[in-house]
Image 1: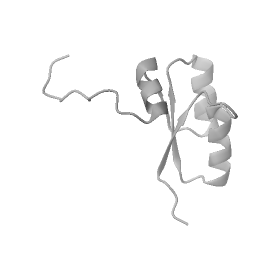
Image 2: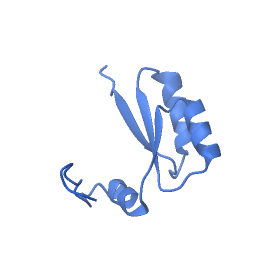
Image 3: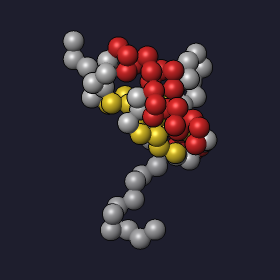
Length: 84
């Protein structure tokens, strides 16, 4: 079986939160890296996610998270030569 190299997991999900999902995934497939996405998050949740085996936690805007959940392209990443 071919495993993914990275799993991107939302912190908030309907049946299991991202921290529990990360812990379960790491117990079953420890070579898979987990990146947690959230539009909110406390330092406690970040610490718990990292302790569960996530390699990182990314705080993103609610609009981007909504778009990711829908599977639609919602934004274009800026070119590195564009000023912000």
